Image (cartoon, rainbow, N blue to C red; front, side, top):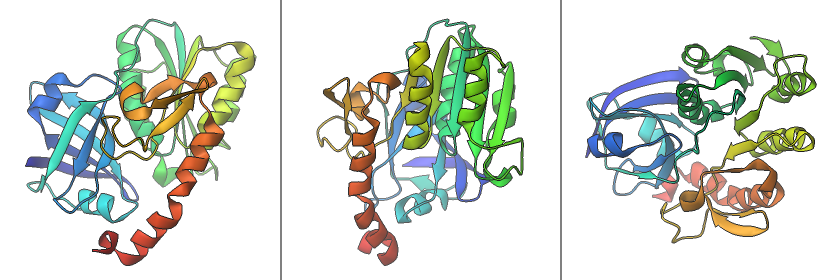
Length: 276
């Protein structure tokens, strides 16, 4: 069992859990993830390790409560426990000193972006972070990202905080030179957002990386549920990723695969507890 030491609400239906997992904390590198189960009947949920403290033996997970399994996880109070925390899994982020780096986070993708951005800053990169959300209550980690970023741009679709619009508008200003032009771009968020970022940077030949989170079950490449097309070749996000060259990703195929499971997910949510 893995004790939950802290459970904080960051935004509606979005929680940050501090979990005691000393072996994971000691081995974890930026970009890696764990698979979590609340109990023996729960689904296996892949979650990015948002931060880790090897000395304290703890990791931080940011969880959005969408279906019954994630609702069970975020309902775990401080002092409670999770049945399984397996990892670290996936390939670590490839880190180097690019120079100016634009880090783009959409919605909950900002949680995945945070450890990546922090590691890039530690390598001496100058970070310009763009985070977007539907409205002010859903903007997360802006202050935390500002601690190691040159500038943080906040975008909301309704204009309730920061600039009104989409993250791609700020990136367009950066690419045009109106704002500092990046030498590399990292983007995490909804598939349409990542696809749009890839198309923006493609004509400029700016290296662009995205972190993918397709349907995943075992996290070891055995089930094949997380397969994606990268440069025309089949890859598995759990073992070959989760980060890939955005200009090589088949985003249309990825979106279609995600839609395949939607009717089943809707059915499970309707039944509650996955039909148990």
